[in-house]
Length: 244
Image (cartoon, rainbow, N blue to C red):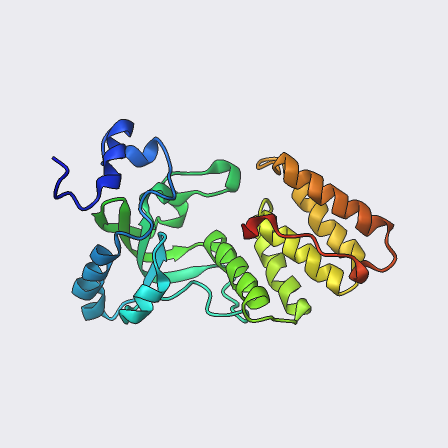
């Protein structure tokens, strides 16, 4: 029965209630790894291109594929100078259908985020919506990746800019370990020990999403160094655990 099935990996959905509602029972980020791209591209060419609309994606796929295919796709963040703090976007949205489930601890409420959109179609576990969203959390998460790209791919050195952008991220997502660590490191490079301490303390004090025990130990050790140092810029930065 599976000889000509192109997606054998979907058969394990049967163990979680069938392919229609399996997403409500479990999440597996390695399930698909962008194999819905041909269907996404077909929908794009059939619908989005004639409308000259814009595509935003909350589903793992090869971004270089979309660029090579000349799709009308854009990131939420176009650079470090982005000032769309409210996260207002309009167009088509392709999302892993698991994103339609609320995550109260993280403050994620899809009913609010997607209230001004309508479901257009579903491509397996990719849902397609059209409309307008106001998604400050999505913008904050994307800004974090823009900062990481700026730091580690472009060798960006403007720590004042980095702190400004990451303060925007942690204001919306206080449990964001990566953003908190990179923010503290940037303040540390600027020689601002108290602000670096504040960034790490805020992470540890967040109760809804507790910091994992090993990471907490690493953060507490860095705090001890910062609080006892008169020259924070001379300290080794804390390695970002979310760089794995």
